[in-house]
Image (cartoon, rainbow, N blue to C red; front, side, top):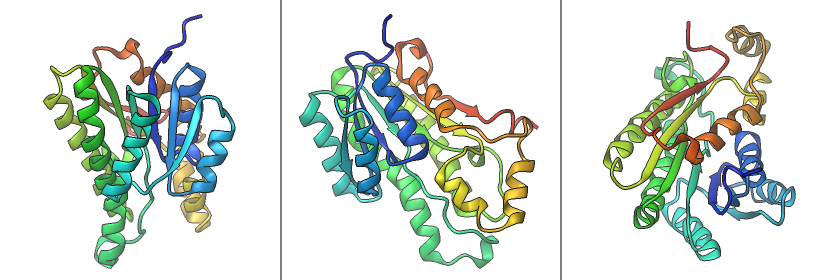
Amino acid sequence: MTLLLEDRVALVTGGASGIGRAAALAFAREGARVVASDVDEAGVKETASAAPDAIAAFAADTSDEEQVRALVAFALDRHGQLDVAFNNAGVMGPAGALHQLDLDSWRRCLDVNLTGVFLCMKHELPIMQRQGRGSIINTSSGAGVIGAPGLSAYCASKHGILGITKTAALENARTGVRINAICPGSTDTPMLRGAMATGPEVEKLILSSQPGGRLGTPEEIAETAVWLASDRASFVSGASIAVDGAAVAR
């Protein structure tokens, strides 16, 4: 059976847990050599240990340009190419009404979620352009297409990801590099579980927003990333794909 990502090199940020870990493992299963990265060094090493022949770990903060530069250089030095990048690292950010937020918390959320994706693409794109091929996948959110009261910083960052994804896709329409975004719905990850644990009303709100009555799984999001990374999505660029059990279809 042909593997979807055979002979490809893939970079995954936010690879210590949740969607990032599931994607790193799915990419490896499909034949890719993977570099998984996260600020959580122990967590990303645990991800790599699940497939040590296929996944290498690298600790980096994607909101820091020098660390991003080092991460991309590590992948290129190790494997000599970069075919897939899943820019997935993110944080929930501060909760509360917009006028109650402090500036430092606002900035940290946008630095990680939006500037981090910008920095990754800034350093990934030149490599892929030189190769004449590549697939970049950015993690947005259902909160990238609709509002979420109490999460204005998170919404702003995830809306912004869709804007830079579409713009980069247009800029690279003739380079052989495709750029798309995935918009996960409420997915059973440590980050979401942490948010739900802040109070019964938060858990009730999240669960009631699911038309199918359940959370998504990281593996379900990862399968979409595998498809977008593969040649089976060869004419898909500039797209924002909701993987949310119809949550934003209402």
